Length: 138
Image 1: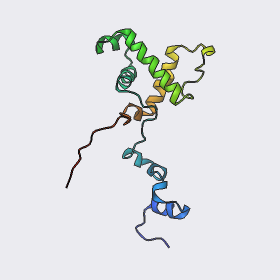
Image 2: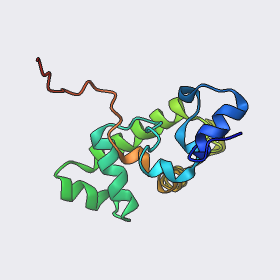
Image 3: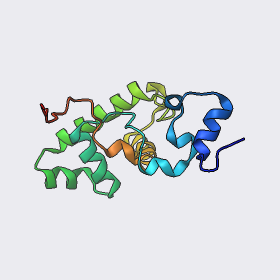
Image 4: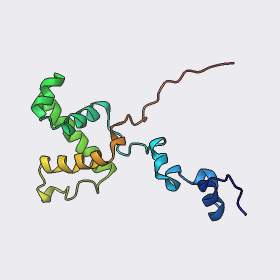
């Protein structure tokens, strides 16, 4: 018999005999992802995230270079680094990413931006770098 105020998550955990830490909150209630969002998967750097954000706003490479005060070659190099990171971390993300496929940069960019639109957590800082926290001694 279930207790009257047992949460749905607790009942599911009890029924399948899992420990509480083995069940992700989003597996039980999708709304919990609002408060516990998934971590970024690709881990873009700050500069890469800024470039992707501007590309999502339909800015051209030349406009991005002009507004950020860098050369167009620096913007293109950043795109190259982004594609290399995606190929390394999630090779399935850009289909046909083979030298023989002839896929051009705009097509790669379209696939990448479509993914980022659906996974906005990629635009958050990845937390890979150690963050400084205040140490409180009592």
